[in-house]
Length: 238
Image (cartoon, rainbow, N blue to C red; front, side, top):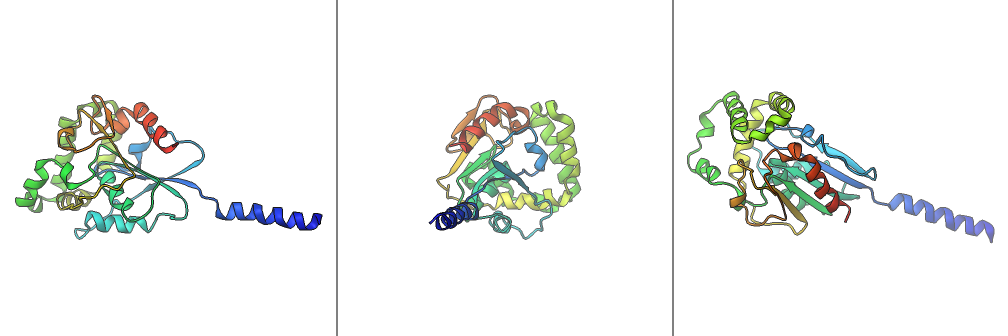
């Protein structure tokens, strides 16, 4: 009888280990950044944190197509949380339409094409980006960031390093990804965090925001990391 009980206990233990779910957070960076954009965030030990890289893309990628490619790197047998910033948030929305996610948190981003400012619609009609060399697009993006999102100066060195390390071709090819993004569906698990002083993706165009950060800019994932971290922890611990 004792031997039989040991077998039962062993089987129960093995079953709990074999079929238990891990909690995994996948991080998706923006157009002018990389995984260092999340460097100020701190996550509980029970979460495995994995940054997804997509620094090399071709001119043929769409938002949906890149999202489909990225989902191949996701361990779908575990509890998944996606956290995306800017372009990464748009990718996270597309990915959450493909795979089951417990949480999809987007920061300084857009849920659908309707959240995008008019300059993207204008470029769809007048695609001036096509005739501009990639290196000029990269330099203009750097300049625009400095002018429009002024609070970046608090993390100036890191922002400059991320922009410098980015391939110019990524800027060139990611522009049409955003311009021709057609998504109209907001998955039910998406939580949108946005700042009132975001000049890159202005708050006035966004249909619904779940958490508003007063005076938060497009760079607030780094410049307001403590406040963002509290909100993110509150979400993922639910």
